[in-house]
Length: 453
Image 1 (cartoon, rainbow, N blue to C red):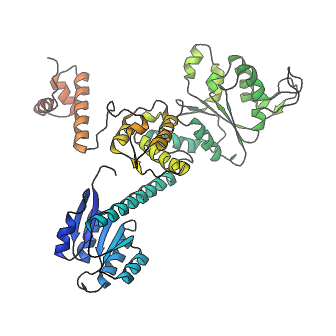
Image 2 (cartoon, one colour):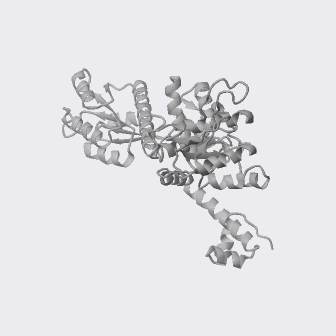
Image 3 (cartoon, helix red, strand yellow):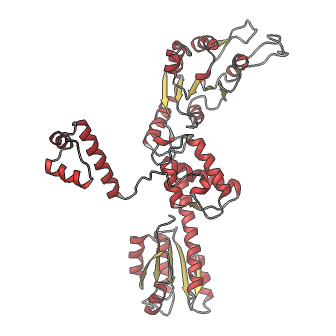
């Protein structure tokens, strides 16, 4: 909301005060009316964040019955609206009653423009925060999966796939760039599965040295190797009955892949140094940011293991491909980090919002969380700036919000594409676009496109 006009409704029947108040509130779009009926009409049309309400309205200008009735109707229609009642001098009783009915604050005549402006500004800030908090709560409640913050089509498609896959025991491979949330998807599969009451055991195949990974996965017996002073249960055995999450399986050493394949096929293991076969009942979820088909061609990953782990493959999109999700995530992180660090930052300024939306986020969700955390700590004002985010606004390719501009850009892009497809033939381009040649010539002039001759 920062940077845009804010709507203020003034309900006052005194024409002199109307004229005085109209010019008090710089930065607000001010609408003025003098009756309850007009006030409700304006309320429905403008949906103001703040209403300045005189209790003495016709047909009872000397009393407060019409003012109280207006107050009740405003709050019944828009409970989030902040109503500031204006009462007569020394009329504290009615002011207190108005607060009890739900008014945000009161002010006694005669009006001091400077003080009244401060009260209205403060009320609007509270309204703004409450609306944003409500929207955020609604977005959380409508999130497709627990822990997943998303509204874009590619991400919702991935979430629907998870919902379908989770109830079965089918082995699932999660593919996505680093920082896209593969572990959150693995946890979502577990929580939606019949094994939800059992544990989920995760192991990062890239984080453990090759010499120790076999023991970490399969466990070992006492004396199996130097330093094995006691029997140790491996991650696979610990996950028995629940879900085993093998993260970064693309980094699994080639010599270990055969042993893991046997476990996938037979669901039995032997601890390192042991001879006893141990049956394992476990749901398996794997993840990697690497291209396993390339690894197979290069002889770094077994093809038979690949087909075992990819009975169902879910592609998790990068943040740059999730239109609208970057700002959704940023606001969610801002709310959480405000609480965590005891801050009261209200929002991002307009340049910061544009930068968030236009930046490619190569580090995905992990990067945006890191940027917001830094910004919350470093911000001095009520709004986070591009400087706080360490994003360069000058280089940002901002997507327009103006519908005409969006349509023009889409038309220009479509014409350029059609020209290339038609080898710059005007007749074929017009035919492909479904328009006449004169119309195409007009559009070429409009967008300054000069096809080859």
